[in-house]
Length: 124
Image (cartoon, rainbow, N blue to C red; front, side):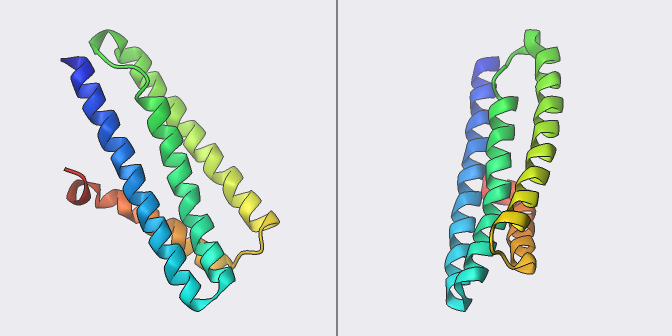
């Protein structure tokens, strides 16, 4: 039973990451209509969120079952910490290494973060 619930949760988490990836691709294409830098910036900003959400889901859904409750709790804490640190690191790298437009990068980032809020409407 717990394996089934864990599998369902893992499947939904990865499905949401795929939806976010699709939204990122759409943002990238919309950016191409404006300029290459805008497109790159939207893509990078949105892919940062997609990547850290994938990492988070992978960390959190490794364990399942009532016996693993403490390990699951620890995985959430570790996953959130890794997610936050990785987000900061990737944003710093994007702003310092890539030729991005800061506003567009943040718009891409925010659009994907907001997509998480609407996850219950997107993923059933």
